[in-house]
Image (cartoon, rainbow, N blue to C red; front, top):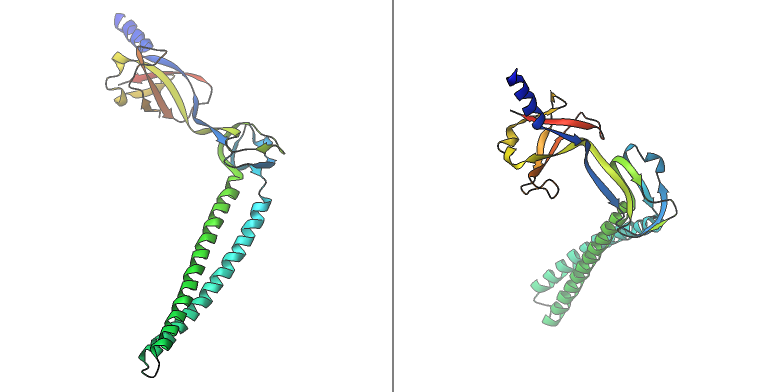
Length: 244
């Protein structure tokens, strides 16, 4: 009888209460400025994957179209100029072999060839700059279509509102896993990672995720321990036991 009482007391002392929380909660902020064209307010309090908020990108799309056209033209110019360089090089090399041509004539063909080659280099540099501008513009457009994946806890903006960089757009929970936080007395930390986790008296798939190696500011004789797993309801209070 005494042994049963001892086991029950030990079990009680080794149990911890914890509230089930999302694996993570993060703030979604705007990286760019602009007027909000669309807010999917109906996705609040639901799990959603996709564009939640759209910032005005009409002018950006026009600029992107113009950049694509400039890139196309520049590529054609490069292709034509490469042919020019090829021919001018052939002419210069031919002149160099002719004993009937003066050195001055040969020099003129050389400078003509070098000038064509420099034009080609300039066009390639122009193309590189245009591509860099395009990539930067595409990044801006992408950031104006604010995508999320998770449980939309709350949306903080409205249609028609002007936002600046850093503006809070929404709060989103990652529900791919659940998280439990317990405070384990320092003298019970030995071999803790090898212990099995029981939830409400049943063995669970929860594992120790993080252990703080300094005493908690509130529970000064304990270390904070986070456990991660699946199968619980966010918000419920559960009893956590660590057993051999």
